[in-house]
Figure 1 (cartoon, helix red, strand yellow):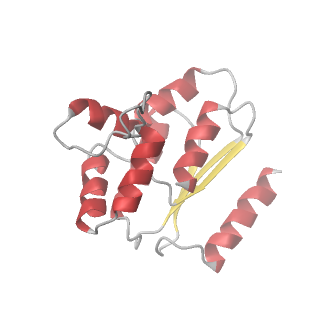
Figure 2 (tube, rainbow, N blue to C red; figure 1 turned 120 degrees about the horizontal axis):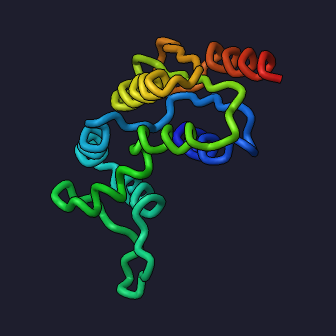
Amino acid sequence: MGGSGAVNVALSHPDKFGHLYTLSPGLFDEKGLDVATEQWVSNGWRWFLDGYAATFAPFTDATNGQYWHPWSADDQSVREMWSKGYGDVEKKVHRYKQGTHKLANIHLEYGNQDQFYWIVDGTKYMSDTLTKNGIKHSIHDHGGGHVISKEQGLSMIDFFSDSF
């Protein structure tokens, strides 16, 4: 959840973080929630589903022994809570745009071979949303998967050395 966390924190607190570099961020486009949860369920990634639910859809009162809202494609309130994590890209960008502080640089990077194929679409969606809102940024497809290779490491070094 590192890339999406970087997006959420930097867009919410640009006064604290002057730059945003995100690599293979967990971001949803309009279909991303359904595509991602289908992947997680079909692969038996219960641990990921539970972690995502605990992070983005917790119960405020866990007296019944259940600490989060489990995934339910048919429950609109659960879908809305779950969307707030990797989704709501347009709302996050809108809030950022309305703020007074701006990031000096925004860079999105992904690999078109990512096993989490919804990340590719979500990153492109984030880029399109930033563009539609007139927010300068860069985007790069490193051509690989969901790993940090030498190329990505060099890209990070280049981004930050140019930024500071």
